[in-house]
Amino acid sequence: MKRLPLFCFLIVATSVVLLNCNETEKNPYLNIQNDKAHYVGMQTCKSCHWQVYETFIKTGMGQSWGIANKEKSAADFDASKALVYDNIKDLYYKPFWDGDSLSIMEYRLSGSDTVHKRLEKVSYIVGSGQHTNSHIININGYLHQAPITFYTQKGKWDLAPGFEKGMNTRFDRKIELECISCHNGYPELVENSFNKYAQVSLGIDCERCHGPGSIHVAEKQKGNIVDTSLTPDYTIVNPRRLNTEEQNNLCQRCHLQGITVLNDGKSFFDFKPSEKLSKTMNTFMPNYSGSENHMIMASHVERMKMSDCYINSGKMSCITCHNPHVNVKFTPQEQYLNACNSCHGSKAACTEKLEIRNTKNNNCITCHMPKNGSIDIPHVAVTDHFIRRKPILENKNEVVKFISMICYNNDKPDARTRARAFLEFYERYEPAPVFLDSAKMYLQKSGEHRTGCRQGFNTSVFFTRKL
View 1 (cartoon, rainbow, N blue to C red):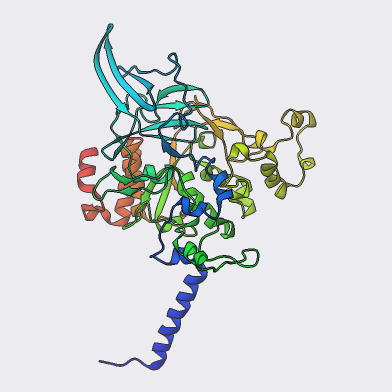
View 2: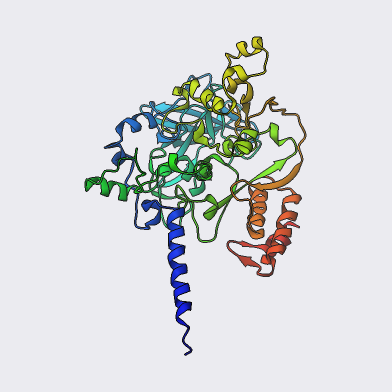
């Protein structure tokens, strides 16, 4: 065997050292580097950080998922309101309390006779109650969504999002990992199942944003305390110390809703704070004409990235304005206004007429980030994070046309990933030929169409069936 010159070995060794140094520089957090780091649970975090816990547990994240009891429910069960009728499926839904148990009765009438009746007990309530309460049925560990939701802002019961217009799957919508991994802390999925869980958390917890806590806890128990006013504590991620892109990657894991395409070999559990989201997944959104005037519920990051404030500042992230440990309802308006003024100067810099400013209490948010309806969740109004000089409120009668599919966490997704996004959007949301045509084009670019079947879909069968 031919021996390589010594300088070759030196080059290789030096390259390895440099690579390792670069990797360390890119991600210095020990709880992210170490595969053996594990989650310890919010109650462990609470033992030291109880003051933060007490405010965080009242946030939308802390209240995202809970046991179905009267304390958790924000719904109105008055007999005149707690009834939903699906006129397409001809089914009634009646939510009611039986002692401390919440149940939903599905029934059908023929005249005054009940010809169908089904009763299901609600195990969990999803949502803080700021916008909605949705309801989860647990059947031997298998989780399904109930077909009705309480819409808090309108104070009314109605079909759950996605169950309208003849799409009511009754009690059969599976709560899979993509859903529960954003609406709750990470569960323990039973192997080889779609929606059976051995353990379910109760609310999004500390480690979702800070990463696994085992190394941090072990170091503190040893007495190794870091003065974070002088240097970072690299045993756990502090999102405030991340750069702007890393901060936004962390938030858009859940606050950027769309078509999520996992990378090969990745799961919804794999993304960790301080990493690039594109390392695990790519999230796509369809771009329509007039889309600046239409938004979906969880489009905070997408809308923010459309704003000149984000584009021109180069430093704007979600936590520029928000403290994730404090409920938005308890956050003083001055915090948001100070974020505006940090770039735009004092309120005196506003060019609007004084009388108009006074009617808005000199509140930048009221004028430039008004509440708007979402096109995917009925009966709710949410703050539009597309910051504009003259916002245009949603026009429900506007005719829109598809333009493109945009990946908001990766500027250069490969052709195969783009194809999978179009296929997913076609099957889940909008079965229009344009999405199949686009998928086919990108599959041909990737060479995937030659393989027939790979990574979960059979392209030859799919296009034969659909085209």
